[in-house]
Image (cartoon, rainbow over all chains, first blue to last red; front, top):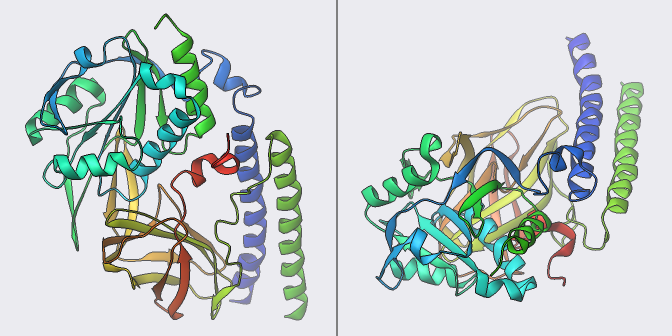
Length: 220
Length: 178
């Protein structure tokens, strides 16, 4: 018994040290993003998670928060387009992504006329157009909110993620339910291609770097 | 016994020193080490219950939803667990974990969140959290409210949390700048 304790009480501070070292390594490599991290710059100058296979901006039609049909390819033609699937009852991941994108947009006012940010709800039942609008307005009044029938939204997920597509499922909770979604922003270039995604935890600096890169490509 | 304690204390000191040195190194890499992200609340007083110490509590909230995060360390020799939570600003409070499978991420309720003997459990954005639903009052950045976290062994611990911005965690030092 005593031996067990000795091992445990000795092992834990050591483990903590190891974990700290690991964390520091990770933390530091993240901090040097943009200039020094070789793995991030081998295949691309993007700081986000580089995709093995590029994603092509899908074509789907949903309904915007003013009740008008919104055909993604047409409405965002020629714009750098950030696409996100989420829901307003999501307490941390969705608002963090939107807040980061909004902050980058605020810091770069030139992007306003050349960028479309499109948020598709995966929870059309609770995310009424009004709720979606008020929620998005807390970040940026230009952000587009899209909804539709559950079938239409599932088709949009299919069109966007192709073989990575997931089925939208509700998980019951005490107070209702939660919904699964993709916890990353997909930034498409002017010519409709995404080479990276921004998973949860991507810093604003990385988002900004990638957006500046996307905006510098091609002409407006 | 006392010898053992001293050794553990020393190991702890080494860990802290490593952190401090490492932290400084990290800050050097960044342009500005001004607003450190490791102290998310102004409230630095220690929250303890038996062998448990709770640090870095904070909350995020938007419209009628919110979440509470903190780190809890268990210096005791018995495992403990978070088994319940309540808050004076929410009608329903749940314990959630975040699960990712391929492109799909979801939150799901958990019965308890373990805080193992000698271990540390961190509730953080994108991971484990105390989910507040049906907020009974709207919360703005800087607001404070009371949460009660119920531990299996240590009992109920009450403390204040401050509502933080959604951008702090991922962007750290540059919040509000530029």
